Structure formats: C-alpha cells, structure tokens
Image (cartoon, rainbow over all chains, first blue to last red; front, side):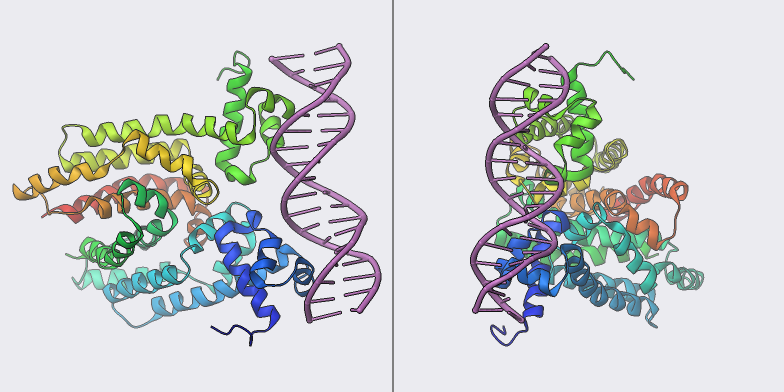
Length: 201
Length: 201
DNA sequence: GTCTATATCGGGATAGAC
DNA sequence: GTCTATCCCGATATAGAC
C-alpha cells in the first residue's frame, strides 16, 4: 500500500503484528519479524527494548481498535435483535481482516494472560449490562428471555471456530480454499439466523 | 491411582500428555516433561527418540480414543435429534476430562498440522454422511432441513469456547472458579436446547 | 538510525559411566 | 534402564562501528 513512505517504527509494528498473530508470543521469532519488516534484529531492540515490550505495543494496538466498537454497540439504543445482528457482523468483519487473531489470543492466554485480561477490565467491556434490556424486551413480549453469558459466548464461539480450526473443518468437509471462502460467507446469515431463532418467541 | 505400579514408559506418556496439552508442541519443554514424570531428560530420548516422536505417541493416544466414539455415534441408528444430543454430551465429557485439549489442538494446527489432519482422513470421520438422514427426516416432517457443516461446527464451537477462552469469559462475566463450574454445567442443556430449537419445526 | 559482530542463555539431543 | 555431563544449535539481547 505505502511501500516506502512508512516510518520504520510502523514497519516494525506491522511486521510484528503479522508474525505474532501467526505464531503467538512464544513461537514468534525476532529474526522473522526483522525479515518481514525488511530490517535487522538489532533495530528491533533499538525501537522496542525487548520482545515483550514489542508484543505489548502490538497488542495494545489491536485491542484499542477492537473493544471500543463492541462496547459502543452494546451501549447503543438499538433493540436486542439488532444489537446481536450487528455484533455478529462486526465480529466477523474483524476476523476476516485478522484471520489469525483468535489463535493469537489463545496463545496469549496460555503464555502471558495478565496484561491481556487487564484490557477487558480497563476498557470496561461488560455484556452483562444487556440483562436489563433483555428483561425489558422479554416482559414486553418481544423476545424470549435469555442470559447474555450464554448467548454472547455462543455467538463468539460460532464466529471464531471456522477461523481458528479452519484446517480441520476444511479437511473433514473436504473443501478447497475457494469452497471455504464461500462457506465463510454463508456463515454470517447462518449464525444470525441461528441466534435470532433462539431468542424469538 | 497407581503410584508405583506404573511402567516408566506410561509415566512418560502421562507426563508428556499433560505438558503437551498445557503448552502445545513447540512450547512444551522436555525438561518439564522429565520433571513431571520424575525422571531425567536423557531417559525421554531413550524411550522415544525425539520430541517429535514423543508428541506423535501422545497424540495417537488421544486421537484413537476420541474419534471412534464420535464416528460410532454418527453411524448409529439413532434419530438426528438424539445423535446431536449425544454428540454434545460426549464432546463436553471429553472436554471436562481434558480441559486443555482445544488449546493443544490449536497449537498443533499452527505448528505441525499434517500428522494431525491425516488422522481425520485415516479414521474416516465424516459428518457429511448425516446429510442423507437429515434429508430423509426433513422430508418426513420431523425436522427442519439443515447442513451438517454449519450445525456441527456450531455445536463444536459452543462446546469448546468456554474451555479455550475460560480466562476471558471468567473476567468479562466476573465469575470465580466455583461460579464457572456451575456455568459449565448449565451449558450442556443450554447448547442442546439451542441446537434442537434451531432444527425443530 | 542502521548495520555487523558477538555475548549469553536455554533447550534438544548425545556420550558414556554405572 | 537410568543417571551425569556435555555438545550444539538457535534465539534474545548487547556492543560498538559507521
């Protein structure tokens, strides 16, 4: 996109992001990040003191884009069904842009979970606030009552799995890459239908 | 269970399983496996030539228990709804017994996926065979028609996420360990209800 | 700021005594 | 079969020239 007019720091961050996302914190190699950025290892340590610091910078970058959009949606004035529908769409969009993000998150959880988890508290992402709205709409006979800790988890799960377990799904159902693209496209409506059906009267 | 009357090879396999499951192939340390097994590194190489060989042995162990039960269920004479219900139960039971299995599988997929994927082909696990039965039951007005590549993926996803993303879920919904146990128990009925509802007329 | 060269460390694997 | 000691490679990190 911008082959030359990009600061070295940005080049490093971009390279680091793609490598960290693909390999996770522990398995990512500084050499590979340097190669991807078109520079050498020493320069990585010049800009970011250590591998951990670099990782943290990359992570903050991703998290600060992802979470606010979610919370904004949940806080909005939309009805529950619309919120869940948009939730699926935003979530899948993010996954299409960062298909290796879930694996990255999972790797993070099993190596250095603390800074990651702190983000959720700091950003105050809290789907439980939906409960009042759910009770309200259920009382007005618009939906079947449900618990966000189950339905939100269900949604996130159904969105994520085709990305994180792509090789397995592709193997079991014998899909080539083209077929899998189509499959991923279909899933948006599939998931939305699945969810709305489960909370409709 | 059998503290002393266990062959060294079995001790190693058990130790390796728990460490590989917790850390994944690349991040597991031979030293940690040796410590867990109560022996030293050299002995690991004596019994299993390399780390890769050891991993393969562990993996074959797990896979050869997991897959046949699944396929047997899918091949049985049960109706679709019963099959899916049992599928959820078996799957969750395995996850309760091996809570780190999903993270292990995901790590594997991003380090050395080939031997893993071969298993699916060898064992012939193929949910697409359900399609005939689905069409049949749908034609007889018992269920709404559906595609296994979506519904099976949905089921597996909903089962797995609370295990693989446990720290996040616990943080967002502020559950302590006790509350989370309860939550996991609830999910069985939650998932089964979710699925049956989605394929019922 | 960017490079080359090197120090340092950790982990898989092997040698060889018992 | 089981151990200790060691080799060897790869990866993070640093030193120092330009």
